[in-house]
Each structure stands twice: as C-alpha cells, then as structure tokens.
Length: 225
Image 1: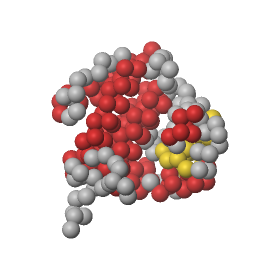
Image 2: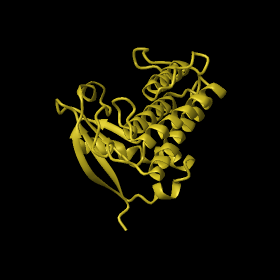
Image 3: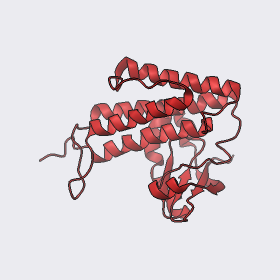
Image 4: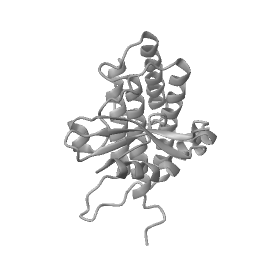
C-alpha cells in the first residue's frame, strides 16, 4: 500500500519562494527558497503536526505515512513571494469535496484551533525576543491570530465579534458558526467569496498552527535564570 503524503508545491512568481503544502493535512505547510528545501522543512514539522492528528483522532493514519509524493506544482501570488507562505489556489483546493471529506478537513482545522488554545494556555506571557529586542508577546500573537479568524469569517457571512471574544464561550461560538457556514456553502456548491472552501480551511488551520508553533519556540517557561 502506498502511504506517501501528497505534497503540492506553490511557486512564487519571482521563483525565489516555494511553499510545500500537504493538502490532505490542513495546516501542514512550510516555505523555503526551493522546492527541495520546502519539502525538507515540511518533513521537519511532521513530528509536531502529529499532535494535531492525535487531537483529530487520526494519529494512526498520520503515523502510517512513509514518504512524500509531489502531485502538483502551481503558481503562487505576489504575497507568496513577500511572505513565503501559501496564497495561491491549487487544483486540489478547487476540487469538489464529499461531505465526509469536508468533515475530515473540518476536524483537522478544529484540532489546530485546539492545539493553539492549549499552547496559549501553557506558554509564558512574555516570549523570547529577537537579537535586537524585536518580537511579540503571547497576547499580541493571540489577538492577531484570532482577529484573522474574525476577518476570514466575513467571507462566510459571519459578523466579527468584539474584542471581548478572544476566549471562552464567545470564541467557541464564533468557531462553531465558522464551521457551520462552511458546511452551508459546501451544500450550495459555493466558495467563501473568492476563496475555495478547501483553501479557507487549510489557510485557517495553517495560521493557527504557525502561531502556536511560534509561541512554543519562544516560550520562556523554565528558561529564566
């Protein structure tokens, strides 16, 4: 049985950035200066993504992956060049999903949210700064991450909550509405405005996961003298 992980390569217009996307595992995406480097970086994050697969109840399927198969190369956008992350739509993003496949992807997106919330709860409020003192603290990252979710919710017709909805029942309600709106658009065969639903799901998952890993990497818990 072939247990290779499918990977799509998003090539930035200037050719200086390539993003490796694992389309079957929303959130698992990494960029670098070349396709080979991007795949290598993606694979370096596979052990970290296992925590997401476990929360989604897909630990065994994820652990069974034994290799990589590049299934597509597609054009990115100017933002791919600038940020080094995926902003282009692959042909896979635009495929019609069955209801079962949609629920699988939603489960993984929700697992990324859960992982983000778990990391938020355990890392230090102050995070490690850069060599020149730059960087953000935990709550700055949290506000930025959740504000992005609120903004993308507008593509689904969901009004953005106020700033008090950064945690607890209000945030949970917004995320539930987010998933319900995706299901509703899927049933109608519609996109989230100009975004394919599959891209919205993986981009949402990626953003939460990327910032969760950022907080983990900069956590000062137990590191102070």
